[in-house]
Length: 114
Image (tube, rainbow, N blue to C red; front, top):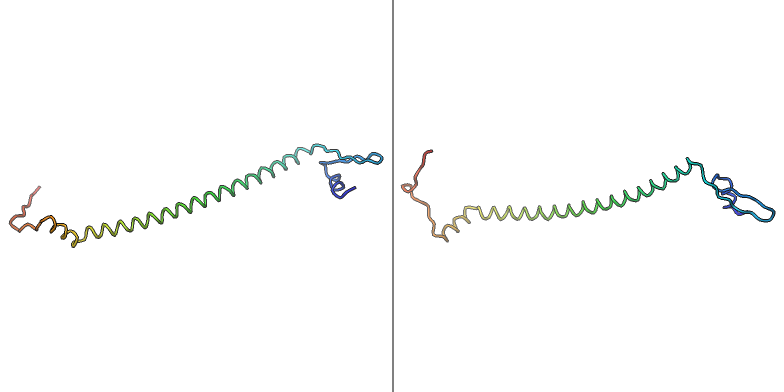
């Protein structure tokens, strides 16, 4: 009798019958608690694989969001610099000179009371 057959005969899943020169294995249904335990282990292992895959996908998505955030932050910084340049007193004076604008005199300024 091989080692595998001997080890299988001691469990409650497989039984063996010996006939004269011939040995045959008989498979019987396991008890209900053992069947439930096997199903629970199977489902938990499949669920673990699913969770690991889901975790990897979330990690990739998080990395993509982090890269997008970095790009948007750089763009925002550039826009702030541009706004600072456009609103500087020197730039405003240059544009006003190009358009032929000048400051009004004190007599030309009118105050309106509300």
